[in-house]
Figure (cartoon, rainbow, N blue to C red):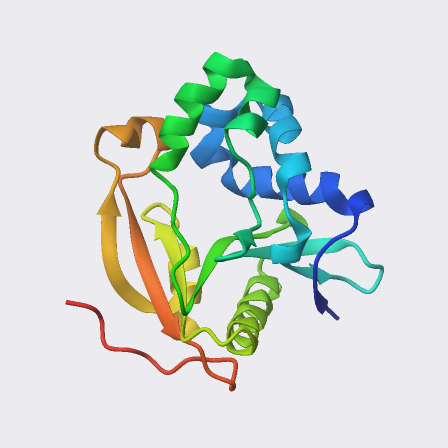
Length: 207
C-alpha cells in the first residue's frame, strides 16, 4: 500500500480526524468525554492540524495520524472553555479535573507525542510504523533530542511497535483509583533519542 505522510489536515478532514481519534481512544476516555456524539462535538473543533502528521492513501483518504506536542501547542488543544461549550460549566469542571491526570507537559528538547491512531481498515499494514518514522524525523527537524510517549498497560501491541522502533521504558505512572474511570492501571513512559536515521538506537532504561 502506497502512503504519503504530511503535516496537517484540512477543515474538510476535521470530522474524520476526530472520528479516528475517538475510535482509538474512546475506550479510555469514554466515561469522561462520552457519549460519542458529545465527545465528537468537543474534539472536532479543538484538534490542531499544525501538530499532526497525517498518513493518506493514494486517493488522499486519511488512514492514520500521529499527534505531537511542543511548547507551542499540541494536537488536542482544548481547555475548560472548550469543555464547557460541549458539556456545560459544571460538566467542564469535573471533566477538566479528571483529564489533568492524563496531561503530559511539554519540556524543552522533548518531542512529546500526543496520540497515534490508525483507521480500523488500515491496521496491520504498516501505517503506524511509518507514522513513527515520520515522528522521529520531525523531532530531528525541530531540534529535539528525545521523543517521548506513553503507552497504557492494556495495549501490548502498541508497546511492541514502539520497542521495535527503539523506544525503551523510562518510568511508569499508576492511575490508582482512577483505573475505574480510564480502564487501565498504569502507563509506561517510553523514550527514544531522535536521530537523523529515523530509527533510534536503544537507550539504557532509566533507573
